[in-house]
Structures are given as C-alpha cells and as structure tokens.
Image (cartoon, one colour):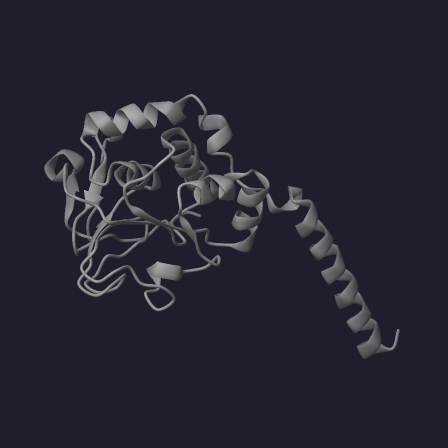
Length: 215
C-alpha cells in the first residue's frame, strides 16, 4: 500500500531507529505516555498478557523460547493467539507444552483480555500487555497496564518486575541467534489441515452452484 500522491499530513515525524538503545513502553494507563524502560525499571508485575491482533506467531515463539529457558515465572501469564491458525501451528511446534509447563493460561484464539469482556485480570493488578490500548479498567478493574513487546512482557513476567535494560538485553540475546527460526511468518497455504479445509470449501461451493444453476 502507498499514500495518494497528493495526500496531506498534519505532521511528519521521522524517527531514527539507530537512536533507540533500549525498549520503550507505554505507561499506565495512557497509550500516549511512552517512556524508556530505564525510567520504569523495577516496577512490580503481577500479570502478563501476550495476545491481540498486534502479535504474530513469531512473538509467541519468542515468548516460548524465553519461558523454556527460564523454566519458572514470577507472574500470571495469559497466552492468546489471535487466530486458530496461529494456535494450530504453535501446538504442532510444541509451544503449548512450554506454556503449560510454566502454568500459563492459554485462551481461545481471539481478542481475550484485549476486548476486556472475555476475560479479566485481577482487580488492581499491574500488567504487561502486548495489546494496543491500556485505557483505565479495560483489562481489569483498577488495573495498571503497561504496553510492551511480547519479548519484554515475557522477561518481566519471568522476573516479576520490569527489568533493567541490561537484564532485558541479556534475555533478548538468547533468541537473537535463533531469529530466523523464531520470527518465521506463517504461510496458511503450507498448513496441510487448512489446505484440506480450503479444498473442501471449494467442492461445497461448486456443488451449491450446480444446485442453483441445475448445470
């Protein structure tokens, strides 16, 4: 996609990613309140939500790798892939076993905590979330919600607090060497069960056309 040639903008903001040396989080409870990790490091964390339409399968693999390496966690984890295809692939690759090993709660694929009406964190909890919004009471009554990457949320959940930048980089370095494996995109046309479903759908559609037209 590209903008129209005559598109007009209220403002143009250019950010040089080379200038960003540490993770950035959005603080409770305003998605516009962005701060460097070093400004909020050490804050206690009660619950972790990895999900919403902002996550792709690579984020769940990265979380799994970090959780497998850690072996135990100091927070309550919620894992909710955005689609059934993500969940299917993660199960086949063994990540649900890792989530279960650390006691993570795996939700039905969809919105879950991000919607705020399918599940809720405990009242007053401090949460690291990969969702797009952290408005007051959205994820839980009186909850204080930081928006963060899946990787940072996982590290915070392992430690039970927001890590220092150095601690985060130590954990992140463990998945850097596996980045090609971890951050592979999911190709639906390469999943056998969904190939079969697609073929069945075509056959049903063809049969319905025949019934309607009598051809």
